[in-house]
Image 1 (cartoon, one colour):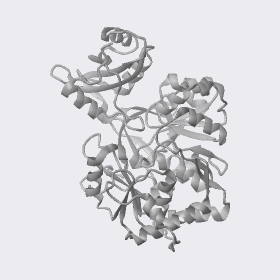
Image 2 (image 1 turned 45 degrees about the horizontal axis):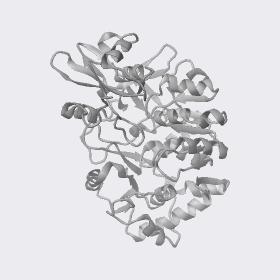
Image 3 (image 1 turned 45 degrees about the vertical axis):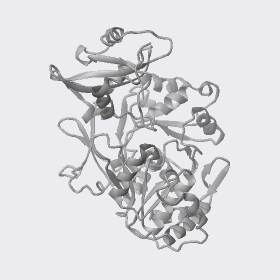
Image 4 (image 1 turned 180 degrees about the horizontal axis):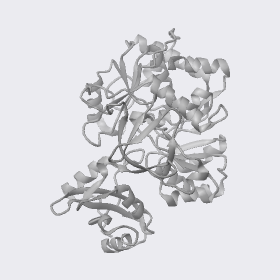
Amino acid sequence: MLESLLRHRARIEDSIAIKVGNDSYTYSHLEALSNRIAYALSNLGVRFGDRVITLIRSPIHHVTTFFALRKIGATLVPVNPRLGIDFLNFVINDVRPSLIIDDYYGKGISMDKVIEDANHGYSYEYRMNLDEIAMILYTGGTTGPPKGAMVHEGSILWNAIITVISWGLTKNDCTIVSLPLYHTGGWNVLLMPLLLVGGKVVLPETDKFDPDWTIQTLVREGCTVYMGVPTMLDSISKSPLFESMDLSHVLFINGGGPLLPNVAQRFINKGYRIFQGYGLTEAGPNNFYIAPERYRDKVMSVGKPLLFIEMKLSEEGELLIKGPHVFKGYWNRPGERPFTEDGYLRTGDLFVIDRDGDFSFLDRKKDMIKTGGENVYSTEVEVALKQLPYIDDAAVFGVPDEHWGEAVVAVVVKKPGFKVTEDDVKKDLKKVLASFKVPKRIIFVKEIPKTQIGKISKRELRERYIKDGFKDVLDEG
């Protein structure tokens, strides 16, 4: 069905669908361009059921290539080029693609070559098989080798339908997609839902996030909704333009991790609407909703499940999800068991439900630290650290300890101009945390390694701590 989405939208109302820089693309323009790309790809040997790996620089070409592959019935496998050649080789060996479109490493043909050959339209049939695998999205491999999540057409369409209904999106809505198109958030938070209803999507020309450009574009394009990860929203709220420009027309959504209360408060103090979202590659990025006016009073909550989505907690508090938007499983991993016997997806995330029925995220199950018989949620300690006036960033993880079983360790980045010791930090933390939650070791570093979308690999931090104690990034000032 996705193969005909652009054509159907163009028939209803041929408005601007996507804008990149000074270039605007209507729905009919996108349909024609994706048709020509489908023709070129089919001439290169791409057939129904094939996998095509993409490392494409141009965001508009990435979008049209996806729709071109849907017309053929092939599967998009977008890869983050920043993960390096070893990661790419792993994905190549795993999915055995019929084609690689590569603007970075020279492992396949370039997108320019595809466009050069895209000189005819492509005749395709309307299909109604929602079980076709539309994308394979690779996880970062934070707990082992990367795994390719098989995202079927039904998952994408149902996520879009549920989002449109639950968040009240219409053809009059506009957004900027700041997340990359090798990430489920880039495709599925707002891009596909807005294309479904005939809205407008602005795609940045570069994958480097610029808070000033984002604010200016939100105002210039009249954007009505915007989703960012915590680092993006923090940067937006710290920009001088945040104070001087009016963003009251924008609904802000945080995803990819909890937003610090003090960051959320900056938006609330300006009278802006904001709420916390939650998602994952395997179940799409949009699963909850809490009205902005309720979020103000409970900024650590994600609210209640969206329409058609069932949620429950396991005995240990793991969030379990069931719905038509959930993925089909992992590519080439028949031994993986991501579902319970009654069909719920195991998210690996620990939640609590309050007496209002609102859900709140506690921690990744694998990141919960068991120390001296007590459970410590790393996110709780991170929030406490980041709210200290002299801490700019922090990450908390557990390491093996002979006495405690696991010891709580924190790596922190100080704000410029502050001179504090490890004991100073521990003393301040004891004012707000139980003593067993206070890190046994606090390491000052110049920066904390993160992915392009601002996420931290706790596994990498543990490995670096055990290997050399972060000696290459120590801040001894």
